[in-house]
Length: 249
Image (cartoon, rainbow, N blue to C red; front, side, top):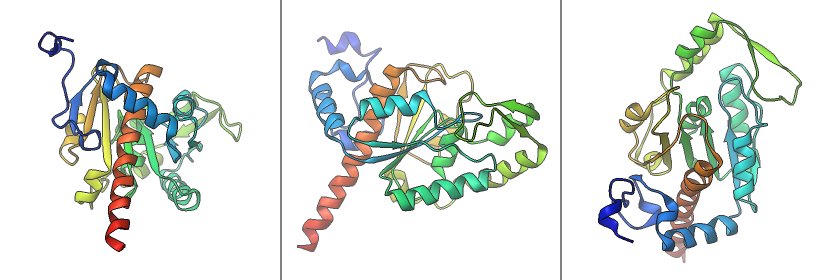
């Protein structure tokens, strides 16, 4: 492979250690050594993955199903979020505590909720950090895009609901320490014409991946980037755990 001729499309990470990659653009199948390691790890991984859906969606999401498809030995937990944002956060924290969640994946609005979950590895995919602003343009009855477990087909966006979201968004970047930065990955599509919070994310977090795609995720993007980010974060977590065990011996 002529690397010089490919530099416009493929950028090697700053470091070659997978667990330490920060900002990069990469086609994962471009390097055979990385691909082989990736496939071995995704098939071997056993973990509990919490998926947090976006606005007007549900846990019955194609993204959650695709994550499960490519992590066959993991358990993907994908709840329907309550409409009230405070209830949604309470539910997510309850699931993390009770279900021994190892990593959280949040898309769009779900990325905002995931970002607020301190102390757990997380992947924020095209995160929408200011849902309240877009909700103001949707005042009224809004249909759900995906089937909900309770059978609800629509919900109402009110000014009060927008205010409730605003209240939890305002302090969302508080209390971010170095550990939090090390366990958070942001994924951003080059063609996302719905929302782009990459610049805001980068003010607080160093680790991100840039993928070729839009706001809605293709199966290839989920396989090549979301799964990769999960593996990197859990690999890092396992490494730290092993070091701790050695220190205690």
